[in-house]
Every structure is written in C-alpha cells, then in structure tokens.
Image (cartoon, rainbow, N blue to C red; front, top):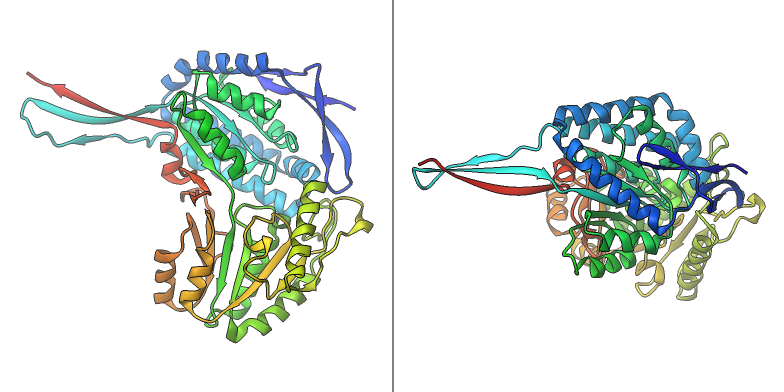
Length: 475
C-alpha cells in the first residue's frame, strides 16, 4: 500500500514511519500517511521562521492573489477532493462537496481581507504629536485541525494566517490527513513560497510540545475537544503564548409553538443529522414547546426513519458512518443511559452491523431526563434527545444549563422573542430559523468551555495580527 507524503519546505517527504488511514464505512485501511519525528516538527518551525520575513513583506494584495490561486486549483479538483473527504471521514459526497465549496469561499474571503488589515490615525491631544495604530503579523503559527470537517476547519485556520502574513505549520488529525494532503497539492501548484505553508502528521503530544515550547511558534490555533484545549492553555502559560481555541459544543435547539412547523422540523433534521451528527455545532439538546411536542415527535420520527444510511460514496445516502468504533460505542452508551433513566427510544438505537463499518441507526429519544449523559455531554452522533418545555423562561434556563456555549438554534415567528433569544442565549453563534448559520464573513467561536477567540469574519484576520501604537513627536 502506497505511503502518502507530508509537505515540508515546499517538498513532498515520505518518511520511514507511517500510519494507516481507515475508511469508516468499511473499517478497512485504504492508504498510509507519513509520520514525522520530533526533529521534523522542529525543522518545520525553523523553516517557517526563515520564510517569515519574505512573506510578511509581500503586500496584502499579493498574499491575496496566492490565496486566490489556491482556491482556483481547489475548484478545478473539487470532485476528487470531495471523494477523498468521504473516503477518510465517511460523510455523504454531497456534504463533502459542500465542504470543498465552503473551503474555497473561505480562501476567497481572506484573499480580499488580506488588504484590509486597517490601522487608524488617532486625534492627538498635544500639538506636537501624532498617533497611529498599525497591525503587523504575529509570526509563525502552529495549527491543529480535527477530523470531522477535515478540509474546511484546516482552511479556516490557514487562510487568515497566510492573509495576515504569517507562515503556518499545520497538523491535521491522523485519522483524516488526506484532505489536507489534497489542499497541500493545491498550495504547491499555486507556487506559494517555500516554508510559508507546511503540513505534517506526527504524535499529537509531541506536536503540541513543540508548538508550546519552541519560541519560534508565536501563536497556536486549535480546533478539538475542551479537554485538549485545557492542556494547551496550561502549557501556553510558561511562554504566555496566544491561543485561538474552538472547543466542544452542546448546542440547544428551541422550537416554540409559533414556529413555522415544517421549517422547524426540516431545520432540526439538518442541524442534527448533517455530517452524521459529528459536528461541534450539531443539535445536541432539542427542546419542543408542549403544545406541539407530540406532533413534532411524530414528524421527526417519520423523517428520521426515511433517512438513507450507508457508504457516503453511494448515491442518495443521507447519513454515513461514525468515525470509528470508539465513537459508536460512546453513542450506544448514551442511548442506553438515557433509556435506563426513562427516555423512550422512538426509532433507531442500535448498531447497523449489516453495513459493515461504524454505522448507527439514526435515533430519536423522547422525554429525556435532565440527568441523562446525552444532555450533559457532547454525543457526536446521529442521536437526537428531545425534551418538552412550557415557557420561554424555562427554555432559556435549560438551554444555558451547560458549561458550553458554541452555538444555539431557535425556531419562532415572534420578532420580539427572536431579539430576546439573541440577548439571553449564551452561545457564540445563534441561528434563528436558520440551521446552517456559519458563513465566511461572520465570526465563529464560542463562550465558556467552548473556546477563546473567533475565526472567520474580520475577527478571523485579527487573530493573527499584533496591534502597535506609534506615537510620533513632530518637533
């Protein structure tokens, strides 16, 4: 079986050591990826530092043109890249194509933002002085991206860092490295200067150690679990190293009885089952107002039973496999725990052994008690826990009863209520009658244990810039 390379200093490197890449739809290895050493990680940071002066000196317009070149090459290869995402992640190809499209949009957005890292002139208080605020790139960035959206969440880090003038060393998940390999091919074809973008796969602890302890790495950007984020926070304290952290989520969905019923049902289906429920912004707790509770459950069950589960490469598939057996085992444990506490399993609830990979029958749980694990922890699976509520105040209290605050969703036709929900819900992104709120031009990130900082929007560029005040005495 061929061992795929990593990309260091503009060169494709096949290392002596490698790791298998598993197709979650079959459980079989279909590729191997090179696995680097601690010296290789340190060398990549050294190379990035050498590339820094030249890259920061490039104009914002010039850096943007490089990003556009990458985007054009991705667009030309979008079908092949989407197939790669499905092979290593399992999601249906239609969703993989959507991921490629959003990645291209991110690149195009930050290509434009590269020339908009505006400073400002501040009115002076003394006649002989003038004050300016300027922004400069922070330096070499160590990036770590996850497996659930293996391409777009990598691009979401790389594009703004490059736009700001920062070289990037990226470590994708060992589970899904081939999507980033495809991105690196586009970078190589776009003739980005050597060392400005590199990607490697290695021991996660060793990569984190190098990023944290090597002073060359001036910023770490990470998407992953809250637990790993806490480790990075503790490790960054010694060098007071800035972090951007997009961590776990536990998104509530609140459906009021005045909502457009069909729109709300369809919205819950999208935000719950897209990407097989393996999304930090997926619906993890669904609250339905009492008046429509029974009818809503019936509609959800009908639509859930109609979902086609299977290999994401097959036509018409709605729900693919979970990423691995550990994820499947955790989901089954959450279902068993909820049922043991009195929840009703209205559909699904079991492993689909006939399909051969890591498949779970999409599950609806009704009347889930507040003590159930699925209402306290992120399930990351096609499992929908449903609860009822009576009043708006009760819904808000339950929605905010979590240490997470990444996203939340509301379905209502009451404008006043919509604005109250904007004010009261503790989440970085709130979708009102919108199950897919994330977009390139708007900031994305969380509150509480869901992270620090924001990606995308103008805030996404600012995350990789230092702010300087310059005071000029004229006489």
